[in-house]
Image 1 (cartoon, rainbow, N blue to C red):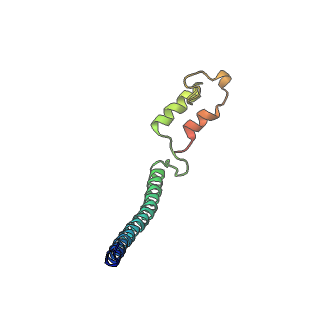
Image 2: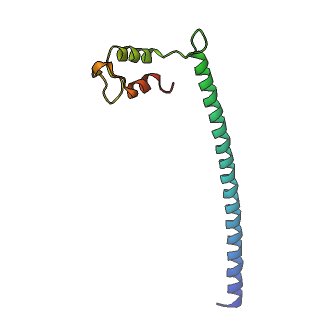
Image 3: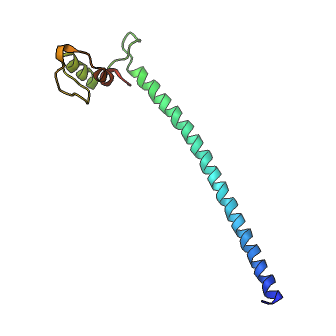
Length: 113
C-alpha cells in the first residue's frame, strides 16, 4: 500500500467510527427515553390499580359501611359450602364429612376480593 492509500483508509475508518459513535449516541438516547417512559407508565399503572381498588372497595361496602359484601357468585359458593359441599378446586362438589371446615374453601369464598 502506498502512503496515500493508507492515509485514505485511515480517514475512511475515522469517518465510519464517527458515524457509528453518532448512531450509538442516538440509540442510547432512545433507550433512555424508553426506560423513562416505562417507569412513568409503571407509576401511572399502579395509581390506576389503586384507584380501581378503592372504587371497587367503595362499591362493595355494605349499608353499615364496615363489612364488604360478597359478590353474587361468592354468595352462591358460600351457600353451597354452608350446605356441606366443598367449593375449593381440590375437592369441588364433594360432601364435607361432619361439616368439617376447609381452609381452601374459605379462601375461595372470603379470600382476595
